[in-house]
Length: 315
Ligand code: GDP
Image 1: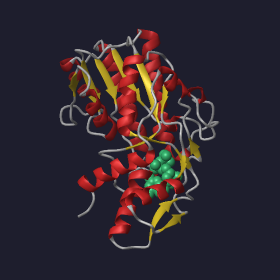
Image 2: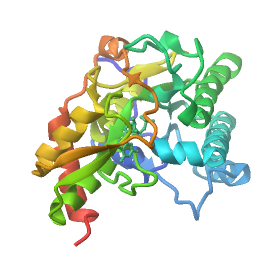
Image 3: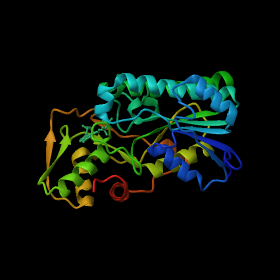
């Protein structure tokens, strides 16, 4: 099958290579015949335009993945809005502009399913963007990510740059953030259930009502989709990346407890926010291009929990 863009022999910069998705993209690129470039914060602070311009001019990547971002769960988003909007706007604007100035051939920007309106019809198609008000708890992050899509579109229209955007659903996997005040729901549940089991308790706590529905994609699958898209997609419209399957937070907690081997009770903390009621992506555009997810939720939780046990669990 002919690809639109070949990574063979190319210098490929993964911005954000220490994060969960960026590191999964680096792992996935090992199977491609390309040179992977990375830079730590000491080499270039991506929030600083001069750093990004200097690094890009010195290293001249052919292709770029923007997986660098200030990310976090519902509590972090709600309580640190300035960091979420400022850092994400700066990172994406600096990289997109420097990519154009340095003749980058292909760029893939990663966003998030929270770009869609809170009340968007489910499953959410790409065309639901900017059709209604955002979910207030993560509007700061969402506005920055919408701006990232628009940056790619504007540079494509005005300068003919082949810059594309992918919007992944809620991701989890290796090197996730397990800190309870800033993490997303799945790593938080793993850490909480693990602690309850280890301490011999009879219950664990879940924020909100347990009724919101979410879709979860294993980060290694997400990385595979990103590499697929950079090679096979060119267009102005962003592309949803997910499984097309959803679970309630209660079901998620029950599944995680089964995988971890804990049969305690769930206690719901209604002082914490539920956030968006549903966030299910319509993935038919991606499926039409020829990509579908491989790792089921139970298997993905098992793999992530094994990683947690090996690297993060308190001993
Ligand atoms: P969201 O998808 O942007 O809302 O991000 P999260 O992954 O942080 O939260 C998803 C849902 O899980 C929300 O309804 C949370 O209230 C719920 N949730 C339940 N327990 C937890 C927890 O311990 N941590 C987090 N972050 N969310 C939790």
